[in-house]
Length: 245
Length: 126
Image 1 (cartoon, rainbow over the protein chains, first blue to last red):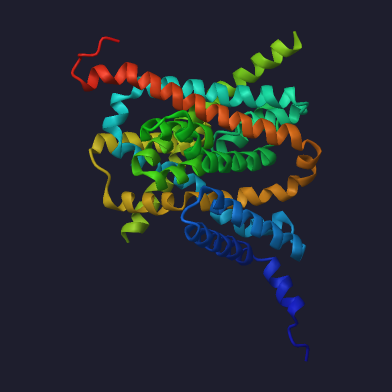
Image 2: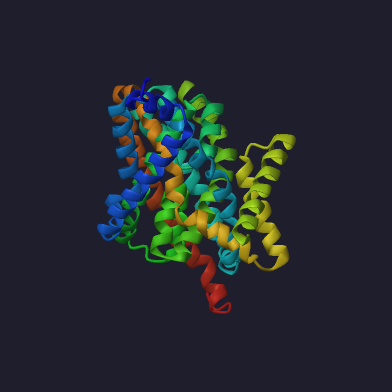
C-alpha cells in the first residue's frame, strides 16, 4: 500500500554511486559552460566553479564526502590513465625536447626544490604547524604523487589532495598574467613553468593557450612528479635538521 | 572499437607501472612509470597509433574535470583550514607564484644559453 516516498528514493540514491558521479559531471558541464561564456577567463576556472557548486549541494542535502566519493571515485580514478596518456603529446614534441633537454632539466630541478622549499619555509614563517608544512611541501606535484609523499613525510594525504587542487587552480588562474608581467613569451618556457608549479590543472589551462605549451606543461608535470618523489623527502630531512640544530 | 583499444592500452601501461613500482620498491607512483614506458614504446615504434592518440586526447581534453572529486574533499578539512588559514593560503599562493616565476625565468635564460648555438649552427659564443 505504501507508495515510495521521496525519502525512500533519496535513501536509495544516496547509497548508490550514480548520484555522486552524475552530480560531478553535471556540475562540471555547467561550470565549463560558464567558463566558455566568460571567453575563457582564467578566473572562471571550471574546477573552482564545479567544486563550489558540489560542496554547496552536499552541505545543503547533508551528504557526507565519503558518500559523494562513492560516485566521484570513478572520475578520480581516471587521473591514472590520464597521467599515462601524457606520453602521447610528449612524444609529439620529442624533437624540441631533445634540443632543450639541458635547460629543461635545470629548470625542473630548481623549480621542484623552490616549490617544496618555499612552501615549507613560508608556512613555518607564518606559524603553520609541522603537519601543515608537510602537507604543503609536495603541493605542486600531481595528486597521486603528492599524496604518497605527504604520507611519507608526516603530512595529511587527504589535506594534501585539496592543497594540490588549490595550487593547480592558483597556477592556472595567475599563470598567463604572471608570464606577461615578467616578459616570458616563449610557449616552451611558459609550459615548463606551468607544469612544474601547477601540475595537471595548469596543464589543462596550458593546452588552451597552445598545443606546444600544453605538451611542455604535461612533460614538466610528469618529470617533476619524478623529481618531487626523489627530492622532497630528502629536502624535508635537511630543512628539519637545520631548523633543529 | 578504436577508442576502446586505446583506453585498454593506457590501462595496461598503468597496470604494468603499478606492478613494477611495487616489485622494485620505487618511490615514484605507478602511472608516472606507465607514462615513461609508453613514451619509450612510442619512441621505439616511431609513431603513435591512432587508437592511443584518440584515447589520450579524449582524456587530456578535460583533464581538469578529473581533479574535481579531490577538490570537493576540501569540505572535510574546513576546520583545519579555518584554524591555520593564514599560513595555508599565504604560503600556497606565494610559493606557487615564486615557483612559476623562477622556473619560467630559469628556463628562458638557460634555453638562450644552450639552444642558440644549436639553432644557429654553432655560431653562438656563449
